[in-house]
Length: 371
Image 1 (cartoon, rainbow, N blue to C red):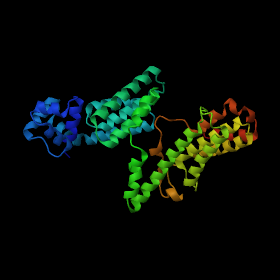
Image 2: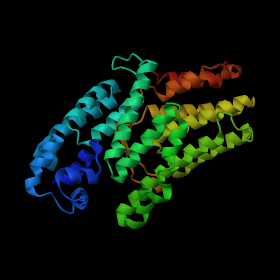
Image 3: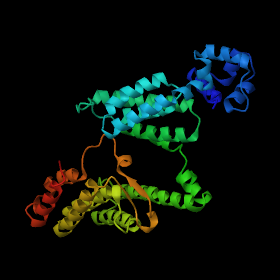
Image 4: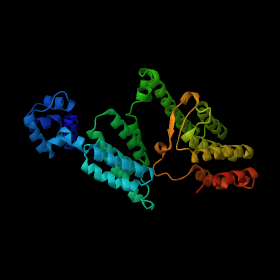
């Protein structure tokens, strides 16, 4: 597949040239450059050496032929990156990706992945934490890569994904105003492919798409409920009882979708929700309710930490959706849900019930699943 239109646009943007400026250099009209970049026509064969020499690339690279030849090697690199990611070796991946970006500058998958790895890497491959300066430098480099991609890529999916990543990067760097500025440029959910394809797909493809959409929308509603519950207690217009009620509605949402208990990876979120309720019940000195919710939190934490390698949902709304543990692994996350719950239950908050038999039983239960 000839990719001269895409490559020409990328090379021009890299040089920060307008179509008019490039047209003047090549002795053609701006309309000709526009047609080449949109793929409606191709440059005359006699111009290919001139264009290649100007941009410092081979004709094969300009036309995309080298990309086809390199695809097998790219696949090997991607497989290695995925393996490292599942092992939490983000620091090693950064080195691999930097080299890949140099060797395959036309393949934006590597640039996007490098941006993401730089943004979330918090430790070296030997487990030693990155310093604050190293983390800041990584994020600054990630922002630079993201903005460069936005200048060079025009396809909507790549741009939207990079803009989303930039939002989180700016937010993590303390520049929330910039995160908001970028986020407000993205389309709303009604303009998303998940919403629109529900209408246009037919038959089995429509059914499966609707099922995936349900799980995605549930995640969005869950996150909105967490924000609404204001667990940081910054909004004095909502009290603890209302916060508990909101979190319980989020639990009920997951129960509605997974009525047969086939939560799979969602069991971690349900455990977390019960833990939130337990913590707030302690604030109300409602120790019985706190214990009940800790028991449920432990039940789902164990479920999350003992998930099978794969499975299939049986609940009505998600019937036959498949679960694959390897695909669900969170990069650089080695903490089990039982360990997280144990850590939280070790806090002073739970001192009033620490000697209760039920509390002790919960601790013993989750300790069985902590390495």
